[in-house]
Length: 542
RNA sequence: GCGCCCGUAGCUCAAUCGGAUAGAGCAUCAGCCUUCUAAGCUGAGGGUUAGUGGUUCGAGUCCACUCGGGCGUACCA
Image 1 (tube, chains in turn orange, cyan):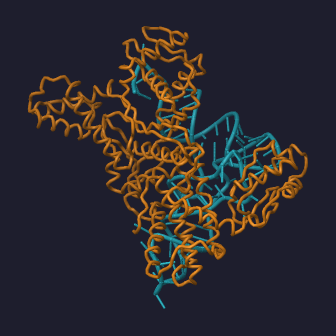
Image 2: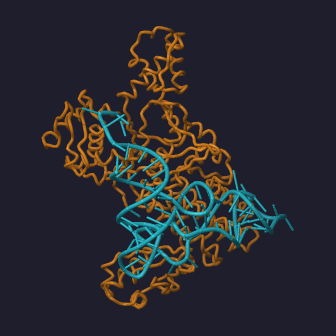
Image 3: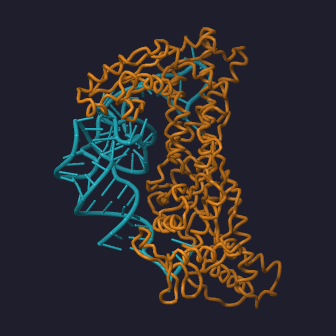
């Protein structure tokens, strides 16, 4: 729809050259009375032309060479909006396009040939993934799907660190539980990992090795076994959500390949670092940040900033056009330093987009559940997945803007009631599947030879929603906002349910029945395509 | 103190680059199944968009300040 108007406005530039000076855009009006698409061009031109917006709107309409078979009516409304009404002949053509393209309908080639990398989850292997990680995992994977739909070749990546203090504590925790299994009296420190999975790993070691490991270093077999077991479980949890990372990048690689040393050298050569109090500092205050920060501690160990900068440099070296980082709001202070560092050594940091999601508050009934891996009072993503299923988990985390704090009420999620809108979408799909099964008995066939019969207001409304799918996908993808797609799909399902009520198929005159069947089938395809982007299944029956 | 995010109906959330009468679901109330799945549809009530000022044709959206909440503010990651 929009393409048609863009080209019409382009032609009109010969008559009203000032149109070139303003951004031409078309909005879908909130109210159906305001037409199918609306332009605010006349209001934007008031300052340039110094005329009444309504008069300008009239001039624009006159200079547009509109095809009567596409646009049935234009009007000037409100303070100077130009509203366009499309013919039903034009809107109903979308059915043909959907039926032709099927599972590819909605895909765009706008970014064909571009490569993107989405880094998400990236939890260190110290414990099972919690509900808190769920939002990151689901949104990251969906954003990756969205980018694929608009043409990107996407790689999903998981960055982890299996060294450092956290991992030492993990090894110590397992060793202590192991000694406990051997019957030794231990006191288990409060800041060790409290979860039962630690005991299970210790028990496994005991079964396999008996008491032979009594004098082993916690950082050897204890830590290594824990890491392996935990990583195995994390990957399994992700797989159960339909998430598969292509690359697991170990931070240690950066040291082994000398990237850290290299980076330190560059900072030094560019006079961006200096020594103070036995540590090496990065001159972030000269790079637009508020203060200098330590990049190598006086113990010789780097802080996270150094490997993070090196890691992003390595990724950019791989030639991506777009890098997405996804993390929780507890990291919001870290990325500006990393960006500044990258830019200082000559990388195009505008290729890196950081998506920060706000925290998830877990409620059970009226109670807030505090989350901490250390204290083990968390709810794992596996537990949630078992309770409500992958479809609900994925839809729930996708349906909200990542900038919003989100309340996840377990009591509601477990209910599987109407409060889970995913059923509303799936139900629309299942209803259409059911019709397609039924019409086989009646020997009705999908046909698009009588599209002019779709004159009912609910048919027209549904057609217009179908028209918007491709643009909604593009919009969601470019803004990295999967919740917009959820909102759209909900509208689509709503339009379908209304159509389903008022426009019956069985028992209707044959040509109309078969044309409506085509509309229903097209809707089913779009719902299924949309749900597939979200990673939610489209059931044939419920 | 400073930085980032947030504050919209009783609850959970939408609202395209600043656009027209701020929309959905849940909950409440009133209707709709001999007809393709009622996990559905129709209708009603419910709002000073936290507050005060400003910018302009036009502000939930932008700016300033105030109040309230979350997360940071490490030689942790």
